[in-house]
Length: 218
Ligand SMILES: NC(=O)c1ccc[n+]([C@@H]2O[C@H](COP(=O)([O-])OP(=O)(O)OC[C@H]3O[C@@H](n4cnc5c(N)ncnc54)[C@H](OP(=O)(O)O)[C@@H]3O)[C@@H](O)[C@H]2O)c1
Image 1 (tube, rainbow, N blue to C red):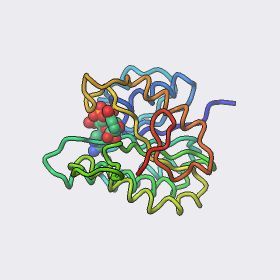
Image 2 (cartoon, helix red, strand yellow):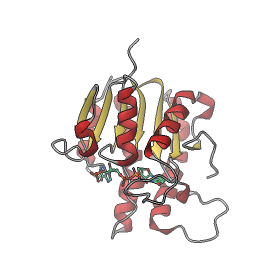
Image 3 (cartoon, rainbow, N blue to C red):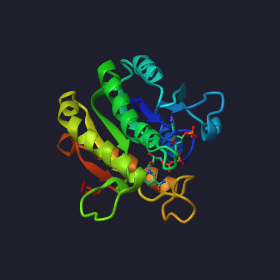
């Protein structure tokens, strides 16, 4: 049987690009979003069954259109990876990191883009965990904390739509965002998450996971 289709949102570079490459290498059809399909970044040289879609996750109209395009796609895994950790505006950080992923997942579920038992994974960060933290989170951490809050608020509803939805900390990874001193390579992080996604069961729905399959406190 052919490997089922996968969606990676925000796949031009970093962790998203590597997830797309690894799923392509494993024989999956990969629907990948980039902000400019004419300049798909690292995916310009990707081999395999790649379908590029244009999306700036802040663009609500385009996000709804994309969900409609993917209706019936039978996605086995849908990953919302796009994120930013630098912005002049905390509002923009909230929009990209917290509001956009929730909106797009809602639209994909509404459109019936994800197959029964499929996995929905939204990239969060350990910096968005509130538990046990005494210092202020900062704009980035706060945006991921709001993402986690919104995710938890919807988890029961999403579970009733027969998907397994999770938020994931990808580790501290050497990317433009993670910087050169991060301990993990994109290859290790993406491989760990692929194993995690492949093994998730319905009882593990609605939780916060790390790239290497450990449950993270909220
Ligand atoms: N690296 C780490 O150590 C680390 C740790 C914890 C969590 N994370 C999370 O993991 C995810 C990926 O991180 P990364 O390190 O791979 O980051 P990255 O190297 O900075 O790449 C970010 C990706 O998100 C896309 N993106 C940003 N804003 C977008 C928008 N408005 N619309 C569409 N795409 C947008 C970028 O596209 P463009 O190329 O078009 O800008 C790029 O493909 C993020 O959600 C991040 O918060 C990373």
